Length: 580
Image (cartoon, rainbow, N blue to C red; front, top):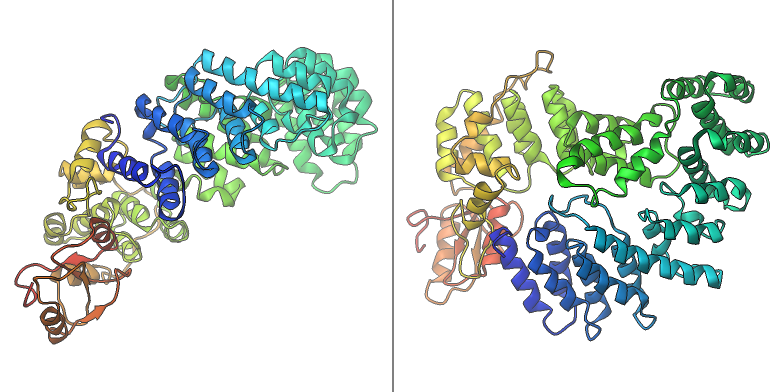
């Protein structure tokens, strides 16, 4: 697993040991879930790890483990993977939950947070498409769709075989109609719009207009008159898109006496300026196929798709909530903070999805108060503090850093840079020498000092993945500093935020909390406890958040030590407490 960071190698081996009996319960389930989430950007770097997914798919294993196997294999979209998943999806004896996940995985053509090198080959796409169409063909023949995932999976399929199946029963497959269609399917949809359930007609109308262009005009005009209000307005917008100013009177007649008519007129003006473009369909075609697009082309394509998915929200909200999710992933794929701002302005609920880019945008524009509130809400106080320190607001950075729950590389970098820019280079030197973040666990023996093997690997192989780690390891924290924007909000007027840093570096025991970690066989636990009380500190019964110090026993789980140090607890040094 040389292509995977050391901490993830350790976690892969740990999880495989926990599930070696083929079950997935309790601690094993929790750690598998976290591994899939944390490892999403990295696991796909090593194709040999696909074997883990193949093993998890084995029919002898518990259904829940097999479900995770399907998810695991989305990181490795090879022809072999598609073949394995297709076999599971097409086997009627497969447990329903496993079958549903296999269908989902066959249709999952999105990169999202996967490794940048992830790409479906044409052969893998063909195998997956054939399996999905075979399932769809059987459902069409039966007149009933038993799978919830199959229609959504078909939204990613660009093969004419899928279009042919949908054309046989467009009313049945309304959920699958979105952004891909052949001209033949589009003509069928245009004729059969009334057969499509109402909740799917808007998508069907847009798709028809995008595929057929002016060919669809006569039928759209004929249908617009008798359509329900929402459908009528959408059809009229599509008619204006395709026909231009000549059809504006139709739209004006429909808008008479309506509230918010001005917004509809503004949207019509946009369509006149972009004749023939159905932006949501164009954006969705990219969003549904990022894992098929060459990695070098993705950022530009995602930027285009983000613009397409967002442009019409200037005039009205998207009726489908999932559109904002796909828009958010396109923003992340573009890596553009300004586009994150546009998304959040249109849909505040998307802040969490584009958190890092959104916080960066606020810092670049000097929006101190807004950034502070957003960072605390989004559990990103450490990252927000670093951005404030970078963009010239050190005292606000230290105030925000004081609310952070975890002692991360971002938090340490923020404190070090902010202290320097606040006129306390002495504190910066001490932070970088005495208060570095914990390293990641790479084995069961002990927690290595920062930087450990994991951090060194990141700096060597992926220095942009965690800029704070790179800056700390290379001793380049001060080089992160940038000038504050000319119109930035003023910094916090008080230097009180420096005091917590001084206290932390002072390592005073009076009033602090201490945890005795691990087993004490040779060390005198009672004597140490008495010394803690004599020093004016108090013992706590667990590795709780907010604990100031810990005493390492004769033996202690490395996971416990890592938890303590991530929460900001520091190990008591020899001489700081009697008996230690």
